[in-house]
Amino acid sequence: MLDVLSLLLQNFSVLVAVALLSLRFVTEWPVRPRRPQVIAMLLIWSVLPVLLYHAGPELSPGLKFDLRNVPPVMATLWGGPLAGVIVGLPFVAYRLMNATAGSLPGIMSLSLVILSATLLRRRVGIAHQPGPLTARQMLWITLILMPNGLPVLLLPDGGAVLQQIYLPLLALNVTAVYVVGAIVNERLRAVAALNHAEHALREDALTLTGSRRRFDRDLADLSPHDVVMMLDIDHFKEVNDAHGHVAGDRVLSEVAEVIRQTLRSTDTAYRYGGEEFALILRGAAPGTEVMVAERLRQVVGSRPIAAIGGRCVTVSIGVARVGTLGPARALLAADDHLYRAKRDGRNAVRIHELTPAGAALQLN
Picture 1 (cartoon, rainbow, N blue to C red):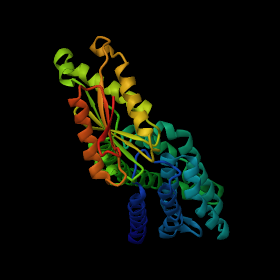
Picture 2 (picture 1 turned 45 degrees about the vertical axis):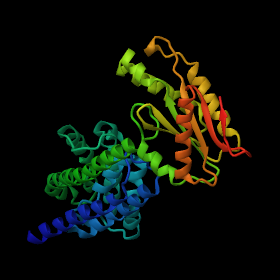
Picture 3 (picture 1 turned 180 degrees about the vertical axis):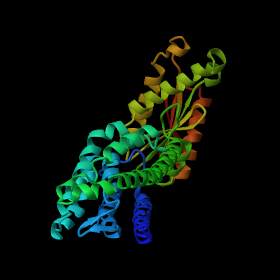
Picture 4 (picture 1 turned 30 degrees about the vertical axis):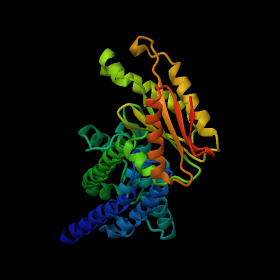
């Protein structure tokens, strides 16, 4: 009896250890099935059924009491039937190459639990909501595992064997799914929380543009062919004072929408702070920055905003090409030309581009 308990403990330990090891590959939520990390995790899990089979106590030649069907069930619940088949195939191949009286029941048992997990996957709902397993989910998982071991009835003494092992085998497998499922879901919940925090650092929630932190990071990677723009909404304090902060937020959102619609897919807009935006134009041909800045000024200035009674707002824009300035000095130049546009009466674009006479080119 002690030998049996020791082997079952080994079975359980192997399952938990490999589950913990494989979870190092999970770095994002929702999990994307075709990512290399996920494929690597499935390949690790695919060796588990064979390991668990060998670590289980033997009831009769080729017939063991083990947790080999837990990994394919969990893979199916989280990744779908293809994931379950990938995890289960090495065990099927192994049993076919080392055929014993229990090979066919073992393969049939594996196939039945993958099928039942596929049919009830949506009921369980593990793949869509990381967190602790609920009593309802465990009920569905118990139903999924109920076919496990039933093909033993095909053996001559299968009825007696099944009567002896069925309920302990079901209880042990359900417990294993609960424990390993809790480990997996806790990891997924932590990854989801981390991804959410990272997303919040990368994107401004109000304007759906990049965050200031993301801009600072991207600025350092600019090349001489890139352009930095600084854009500020004119008289924004007056908008807030006259219409309230909710209306002010709506103005910010609509201006940000115009910016996103005007830029190319390779360009990026960021909320720099308050009512000020930073823009990066990647690989912009000479003269492109002038056209983009003017188009932004004109489109924003002609867009009625319902939140402020159908009035329009204007913007002032400062522009600098990275060129020989470098990213940091280009930002300072764009910011300086933004405030030149403000001082010159607002609703204007100022471009940092030295003429032969050495003066900054100004575009109204």
